[in-house]
Length: 162
Length: 203
Image (cartoon, rainbow over all chains, first blue to last red; front, side, top):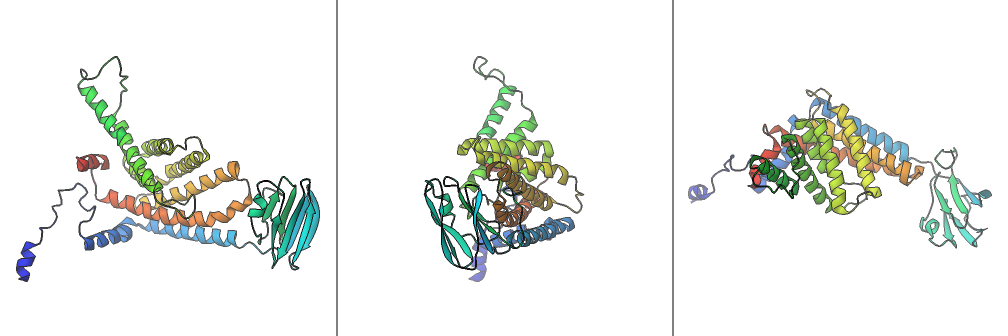
């Protein structure tokens, strides 16, 4: 029976039937093999390619370490109308009210984070920005001319304060 | 596909001049290279459309499947053809999605231009040690660099976008490698051009 079953099975694929002889794979098992072949066939990756991969990996790791290790802020600088209104430490939880041309902006400091709770600006961008935690982060309420910037131990330069 | 058909139609016109109507047709003199480029750009365009159907966790993180075509064209027809295919894909793709001359279009354009620039140098790496995977990774990183540069200089001039760079760089490494492997896979089994294979396969 088994031998008969074997004889009934379809003949192997005619390699000339489809121009790309190895693609797409036909049976389920061959599909897996083909995918593995595509991704890990050593002939596709030459020595220089491995070097490039390694270089790219190192690049990604270095970029991540450099850009994501922003030191936690310890001070919030609140500005109103371009002048420094107050500098407050993040260690103490508090609410601060700042008067701008449109009304009062309320700034909250809580658990070493800061945010703008309410603001009279029409689009509420600074309120929707949410909590600021890392040094260099900044929330601007332009219509009301109020901003909160977090600063850390060392001053970072960016396009705004350079 | 349309440009493919058009290419064949004009080829027929050239062989049978009596067919085409001289009053209504401006016959462009196309070369075989033009047809290759049009075909490959059409394939790239198809992949762009396909890719846009894939949801992305973060705007801007895309596999860049069309770059597989660019890599194959670079290997087979040279850098000039790759520039044509890549730029045609960007422009025609933006027309398809209605994003021509929008910020998104300029982002793709700057990314494509940067990766083509890098490919111009990368193609001269010794072929014994460096294959399409290397080209693909360098191009992917250049693509991201070009886009981030554009975003920073034009759209969001704030240092905060630096926080996104590691995500984009990781995506570039992963997708660059995968695209390069796929391109290598297509290249190593074929001695004849992909375009003729494709047309044979579809007929």
